[in-house]
Amino acid sequence: MDTPQAGRAYERFIGTGPLAILPIESSTYGFVWSLDPAYAERLIQMPETLIRALQQAVPAELGGIEFASDPVVIPLVERWVDQPYRPGVVLIGNGAQTIHPVAGQGLNLALRGVNLLVDALRTQQPDDAVKTAFSQWRMNRDATRLASSSLETLFDRELFPRKLFTSLGMVFGDQSLWLKRKIAEAGMGVIS
Image 1 (cartoon, rainbow, N blue to C red):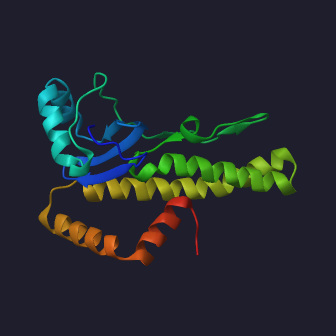
Image 2 (image 1 turned 30 degrees about the vertical axis):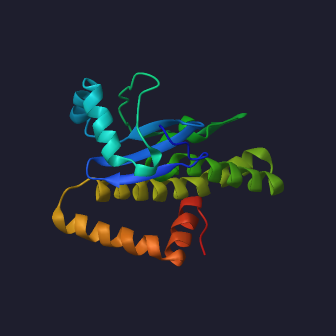
């Protein structure tokens, strides 16, 4: 991108699906765009069309787009293990589950799992701590999976009433500091 934005990440909810713009270096960004698989395969075969589509989707202040490497299509598959631990091993993050990448909830879920495990290890024997933390984490994971899936569905459909509701919600949400704080807290697993 032409204009470096000092490590700032973006997430855009557009009609074709959520688009994450993630800083890598001073003027290099990675794009994660959740698209219909057939549309993604068509775009990847037409680099100029892909660049134009991205250019329309990203904030204007980021400037022009050129590829630093060849774009790739990676299918999104939701998976999770039912038992992410055994003696001496605990799976976290994408080792324990993969969820839709909307709003970075996979990372947030992994960090919450680590936090639950550390808290439990402070007061319990390791085997008991893992069971306690996993029980709490599983409830959090299930709620996060539902929320992530719902967000993806909400923003991925072209139905007019849903688009209108979503647009109004985004405008209101952007103006409400209280709502922004509540959404951020929910993303971090903070319940108040």
